[in-house]
Image 1: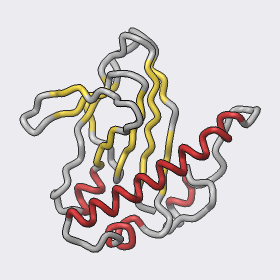
Image 2 (image 1 turned 120 degrees about the vertical axis):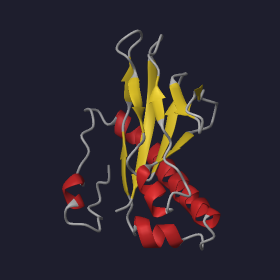
Image 3 (image 1 turned 90 degrees about the vertical axis):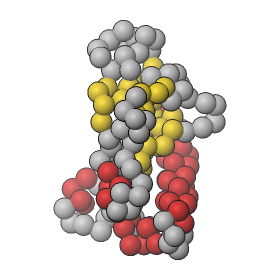
Image 4 (image 1 turned 30 degrees about the horizontal axis):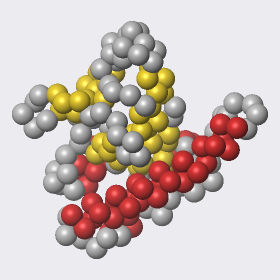
Length: 164
């Protein structure tokens, strides 16, 4: 998550601080460009979502997200044939950007059925969150999704982007 201390809320400031990286620095060093790219992609998507609502492109950013959006990222590993996967849910935040190395993500359609969201090279899956649904008055709907039980080891990199 954010390490720079920039936060609009004193309550949220409890979530800001140094990340705990493995010794050696290689993971941290290789992750920094990815984290910067995810922040830029989330900001660009937020501009597009503003325009989709008929607003100025920076309106959601300035009026909802704030000057220093909060983000969290994690490296997730799903062992093969272990556990049920991840149950159906909607993310509570604004946007989630997701890279995965293999199948598993499923999204619920408007009629309640589930479809596979297979990863594509050089692409991310985007899940809209409940905060965005609320801020848009329901125009944008949070994405119900789940992760099916993996039959081979699976890795994913979710990046959660939220108001400050």
